[in-house]
Length: 224
Image 1: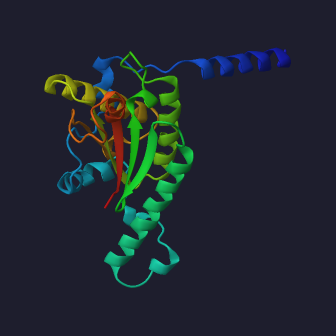
Image 2: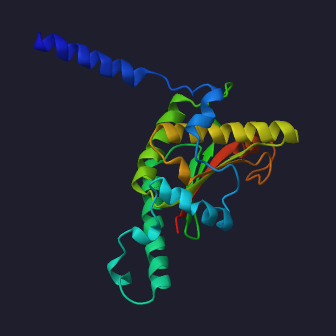
């Protein structure tokens, strides 16, 4: 009997691991994204969101253990040193974990930006997250739960197309990523979600460049 139960459990685990992820129905997205802000993650927006973030269990960078060299002296300088160290460690972990085609991790000051080309995380001809994309986002979720003294902006972008189509598609991509992260334990009070259409291209609008311009960027900022 014991061997039989173990066999059943093993089968269930195997089948669970093979289940393909699908985004939930669109009419449920507001439930998963409750607490997220649908606006650019400006400094003013982060300050306004901070009480909500803290009320939802978030923590500020000032609560993180500081490096030994930054435990004395000027508080502003110490907080800056803490942020730099914290975000550098976050960048290294993301970089080491996300060595895949179509994905890059970059630094911009103390900010860390993860660029996810659409075809690296979504089905080719279907508006849904692919198996590889789910695996990538699961990895990102684990790291974001560890480095939780951060706000994150999830921004969708497209290649050149009509403004209405670009706005709709870019927001759809950003929301799908936000829903996935929410389903995998990321506090939505940390999130800013925006669709920026065809703005800010990072490649030429030729056949290859268009594939690069269709992307989701996750920008991480220390919570202060």
